[in-house]
Image 1 (cartoon, rainbow, N blue to C red):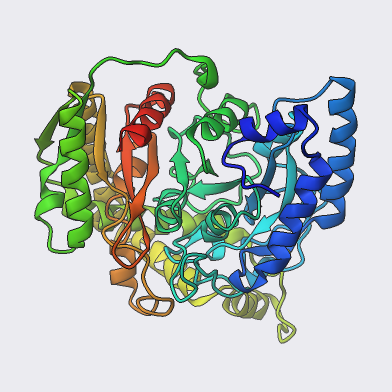
Image 2: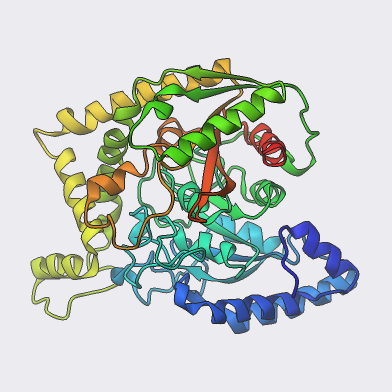
Length: 474
């Protein structure tokens, strides 16, 4: 089977009968079986995917098929799919079967996408390396001693290792973009509210967004076009009309791009990433674009602000997992109190317990104003600063991560170091603006490096158009 980099290539071969959807699924299933050591999937829907593929082949033969016919996609294990398990890679939900599908799943299936399985992730999407999963760490296909990034590491590796054409992840503070960077693929975080959160197991409700992980910008645009839009089941979904991302004329104008000068001065950023940034700035300038440095005085505050707020929201969202309503219940529970304490202590992993405890602390009486309320004020300042920069420039260019993929087990025991890996992805999350991570080649060790572009809220069309151009330019 040939390597496909986009759905357009797949559908061309389907049209000339060079391949069938059944053949595609069989190929991807063989790749999944061949690379089980990567631990990218928590469950594979093999028989179901083949049955659906046969049905879509019949639809193709009749000429009545959806826009995603031939798209074999994997989903992160915190996205509900009716009649299938969804665990958020946690013991506390092991074996739980969803009774409904997320809105994004319904929209993909309506266009004849085939869901091949659910991907491993950091437990409840809390992590930046995919090492906190109850089902074990995911390994990077480029180097199995390295992490794939998190929390959507399984989704990124599934695309990276050619086990599906595309995958869905969720991005709270960088959980689509960071693994996309570490794995050398494309990862898009939409504007907050652009995509429905209905059916997504919540981590931090004012941040979470579903985003595609793909090999081509055009596939990211197509998936966004289908998934985006208002949803009566999600009161936070935006009412803005969804543009036809795939048919908007290309903008060939010279653009204004900002970059944050403090990043190039930071000792915490690997030199090869600084060199990559400098090189791409020069490439853009040589092509006639305006690329100017800007100051972002809040850079050192984005990580603490993000974690105070997301931990607070997590402590609230995860209170429903109590050993009573559904999910894991401790066999040693003897009364109401021990049911709660033992079930949650045994059911949640160390990182999730840490975030629940810290989140509960910052919301507690006497500390609420000192931590949570203050973090909300700083979030507003960060958002205003990002919005101000984007009011004067079309995009912000920055690294996706300060380092390339690191060793499995290297920093997972040091939460402060791990949290600082998010320093360049959380600004877009705090501001609620769209951002995309683009693969920019490999470092001297052969590990992928990524850069990201941020755009104004709801400017995904412009962001996707320029990203496609930038990849060709680069």
